[in-house]
Image 1 (spheres, rainbow, N blue to C red):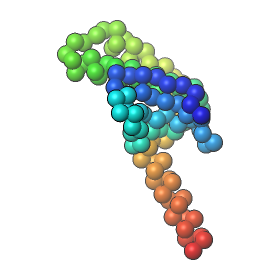
Image 2: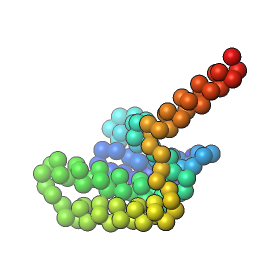
Image 3: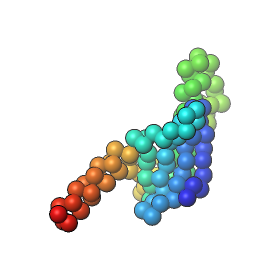
Image 4: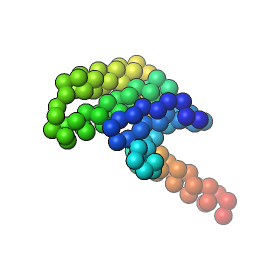
Length: 118
């Protein structure tokens, strides 16, 4: 179930409730495609929401930087979001698990089931 969505310049960061935590998935705003490699799973909702806010701010800042029009407001927002995520991540001991690790964990689990049932 989708509980929040934060928009950057080109990407939308969706926080999805799952049985094992809160997944932040990245969706291309132009095509609607998911970037599965860029997903991150958190144990807690505050960490997932703060992370989504931070990466959306980073996306907006990067887009402004590419347009060669640096914006101090965007830089300040990015720094605030980084600090907020770091504080929440540390206080909840929730660093998240990146998409590569999730895929590897799923593949290992599938392989273990195949060995067990075959």
